[in-house]
Every structure is written in structure tokens, then in C-alpha cells.
Length: 219
Image (cartoon, rainbow, N blue to C red; front, side, top):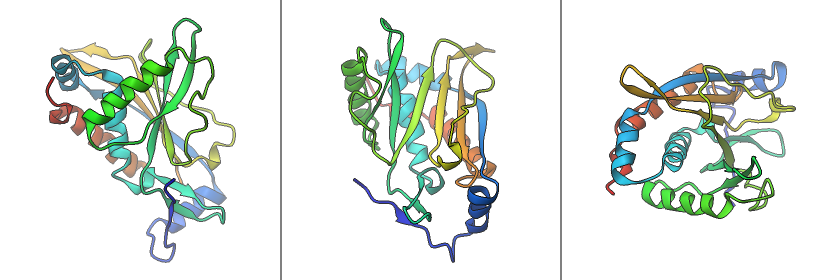
């Protein structure tokens, strides 16, 4: 397994901010946005590739661009950065009306990642346990989908959330508006890891990926 790389607190610009939001005023925050996915929907329709793997890949790609979304704390209590973070995501069992949580290694090649996720979802869509692969690696972050409803706000009340540095993403049902297709997305993150600037940048980079969809490839 990858090992996190400790942050040099003497040179880290956010050292004081981290200490404040980790120890003095521990807090998380959530941001919910609508993202235009019109181009993504069209590209996936043309290629025959699946929506959920594309959503997960785009999120994982932006997460892995920025250290603040790959943050953890060492056993000594010091902040560190995973070299790579892998997405853990939900798969719904329609018969039982329960879900399982699975994960796959992040792959910057979308075609390979897509096929791996499609196979994983097919294998575990009838899972009767919550973690059919066993425990996810420590450098995983969570993505879930609520495709049955749209939303304008979404928050998770995590017991002990003040110790959870990895981001959590929740995707809602697409909405058609003014001839465009919009995807609700909620991002929850610890304030010690990322400020509003960092989360806003993540959202903007996701918007770009969903607008410039050459990465989806050809069918």
C-alpha cells in the first residue's frame, strides 16, 4: 500500500490554519453545486460508455491533482499526503434495497478505469454485505450516488467527523433546465484540509472536465 508523505510544517503555508481547524475549532463544511453535464451526456450516448464510472473517474482525477484532497494524519498526529487516493463508491442492490461499498484503484486512463468499474459493479450489484471486497484501503475517499432524486443541499452528520480528512462526494439525479442537463454534486470536506478556495477550484476543474469531454473517447 502507498505510504503518506509527511508535510513539512515549517514551510507549509497552511500550518497555522490546519492546527486551528484540527485542534482548536475542528469543523467540516459542505458545498452543493449544480454542474452542467450536457456535453458528458452526449459523449457517453455516442460511445456507449456508462455514466457512473465517468462521474467517478472525473471526481477521482481532480482529487488526485491536489494534495489537500489526499490528506491524512500520521500515527504521530502530523498531517501527511497520500501519493494517490482511490475512489470507494456505492452499488445498489435493487432486490434487497440495500447498498454495498466497493473500491477500485484510480487509473488516469479513463477507458481502463471505466471497464474496471463496470466489471466491479456487475460483480457486486447483488452483494448482501456492505463491504464485499473487505475493508477499503486507508487512502480511499468516498463517492455515492442518489440517482432517485435531485437536491439543492446535502450534508452528512458523521460521528467523529472532526477526524475525517478525506473528501466525501454525493451525486444527485440529473435535472433538465433551459435545454441543458445539470448534475447536483455535494462535496463535504474537513476545514483543516481545505478552505473554500480549494473546494471552489475543485468544482471549477470538474466543470471543465464535464465540458471538455475528449477523454470519454470513441465508441
